[in-house]
Length: 416
Ligand code: GLV
Ligand code: MN
Ligand code: MN
Image 1 (cartoon, helix red, strand yellow):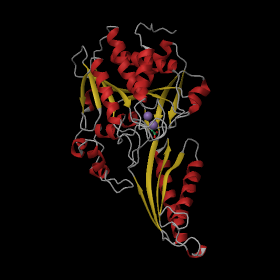
Image 2 (tube, helix red, strand yellow):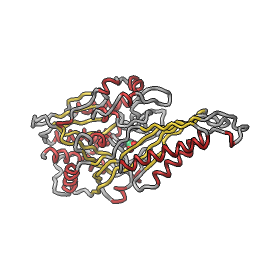
Image 3 (cartoon, helix red, strand yellow):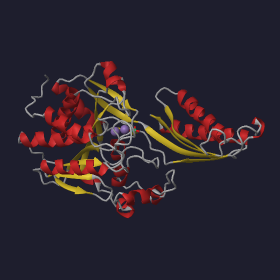
Image 4 (cartoon, helix red, strand yellow):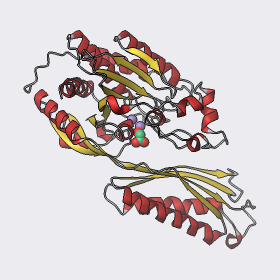
């Protein structure tokens, strides 16, 4: 044990039972532990979080973007606050820890502080951000983007595979598009933002570290490419006379891998390719392809965009296939705040946990909030680095170390 006495008791049993209660809320017809933001179960999860926040003594609201927000008034009455949170939605076929560790952890930090009689000077604002994972429209971090005022009518007009707009999909779950656009927050009184999260990669395990302190969060660039060819008979259309949209898309899938494979921390993923008609004996007339690049440098992402657009056009040209590549607004890499990182490092050392600093290849609400507020992230190890899959696992002892770090970090930041 380090120099910080752990007189503030985080309750591992309570953390575990909250994690399992949230994780159990899944879409039964989908694989793994699925709770998509626009699906039928996510609302139940956010309502549960709302109840927990109220029970923990927070003043709760649901903002226009569906974010669940709880405020614990500080003793200082200064109007200044600290913000903390993460998300409760999951990817399809995801695991039980991504996002909810940070939401459960933040609420547990409030309980632990109150039970220890430790009142902060700052208000403490806990947020369960709506829709962090990329949805059917390819858009991630809806709730945090709405908070920083970054969502536009263009985002709301994005289409899914069924031709539905994002605004319509939100209306179906009771979120009004105009309220979403108006949900921005004045961050001038917020002194720091913290997010606790699982690492989702193998680094901490490899280093034997209990805690990860994030130095920066990856930039992300997502695209949708539409290839328009011609349907023909699979048995009679000669190979040289085809306009096969599927082959043009397949060539572009490989280009994503090649472009990203040339860097070190750069990543490229072809997440979704849909062929129409989906029939074994018809040449593909239309391919709808969504993918992304990630990396620690915005300049590399811009180059990757140009290279991929050129590669897609080349694949189309070779086959007489039309190509349209649309890029979503690029998310720049997000450095975490130096002073917040130093405060976190002091706390981790004081608590006697082993730690490593690292780059996050996963995106997070913290990357969005960091555009307005000095931000920091605390990571806990992921077994075998697995995440976005049902096998995702973090030991309770590590989750507890993360929650303990978060709790003491709030105290440290409160004093600054
Ligand atoms: C979110 O988990 C992401 O990195 O896609
Ligand atoms: Mn995720
Ligand atoms: Mn996450």
